[in-house]
Length: 277
Image 1: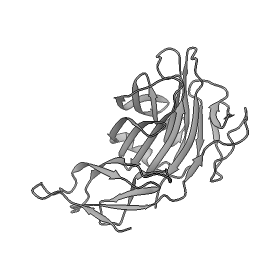
Image 2: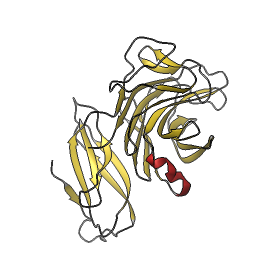
Image 3: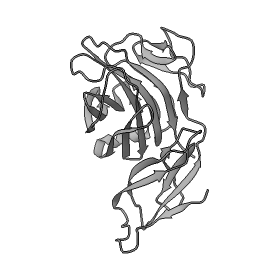
């Protein structure tokens, strides 16, 4: 596919170098990845991935783009979705002791707690707050996807599944999750959980929700969808200062928040990481 430069419409101000813009891209073809470049096609970042292959869908991706040097255009490229860096549907025998390995052959590591498989979904066997499992996805800039299900509505009785990306160690990582009517982007820094971005979202117990993270450098998008990809909520955030320390790390994973006596189990499914060209 050819590169497609984006320039302002006639009559509008031209792009200004070293200035941040929100660029909205409509991505219509199923089974395609979409990339953008701000340096004439030398460096490409993944902005969107359509994992469906049987239907044509309309997607919307965003990136907070700071145009470098004297660049006055943003280029787009559409390519077939390449092999995933991590890909796990957890479709294998039940286990109360191990998650095993994903479709790429990468093994899951139980950082905290015991993890297993139940009815082709991942779960925390130990069912304890802050239970964590990781996988060496090898992606720092890309797209992370997961389907989660749990007890999401209560502040006292909850089992909330989270999606980890840019994991440094058990005390330092980035996290996307949904709880109590919110979609949240958090950091764990020195073992302390804090919020980077939050937006109102629909959260219901015992319902499959999709969480998608798109990251390129300091720019992070967190999106929530229903299981059929109906849009729920979105966060657009730019890391700054000490929070940029996460950018060099490529491990991903799953995290559990547990409190009280929740009625609905926490489950993870369709864990997928895309990156590169």
